Length: 300
Image (cartoon, rainbow, N blue to C red; front, side):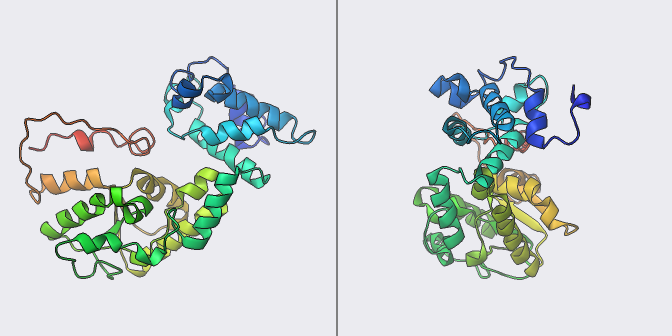
């Protein structure tokens, strides 16, 4: 029972000891479904964590432990089925932080880490080019970058900013905002990566630096409503930035929440379709963010 766990234990140790190895998490883990190794299951990773904690002073951290932790997608599926209510996503992040502190982060993590510190985005391109996608707009709105006092701050995100296959997202959102008469702006080249890649790799202090930078830029513009089309950027702003935001009032909306609001206000008119529409709940929006109903709301 949790009440009997020594209070001196770290979060990692406490959660690892709670696991009863019931195995309910096995079938919910997408990584296990592909790999098939017990060590890839949530209970398997927790078992490895126990060994690492128990033998930390006696021997080096096993490579298998590092590998299995790196393979986890952080989807949070195992947490929804855990009968002892272990916050597994938080546990995996704690483990990765522990790995990074021991200097055992995988080479791919270290390479991405260096790229993020150098370029402030995951792509490696010059961060000043974050608005390059806007060149494909028929008309570029005034104040698209760093407009003080705008009603909405649109946080575009690294993927939508730099990867052509995702450029239609900010183009479409910008068109919707313009046609609806919404006063909005972006952080332009001052927008840094939201910090999730650093957080997910265990480099927590660096992630907080990125979060603080973006908050500082938002405060400079006196913006109090932030819109994000990326579920993970949304999750960072909504949940992981609270400590850094402090008392600063900021409403954080995912695009699905914002679009639902505009449709209900009559600012957007939808046309009916006879086609079949399939909607996929992003892990960081649905399971990890709690936003399920807004995209499904009947507003016509």
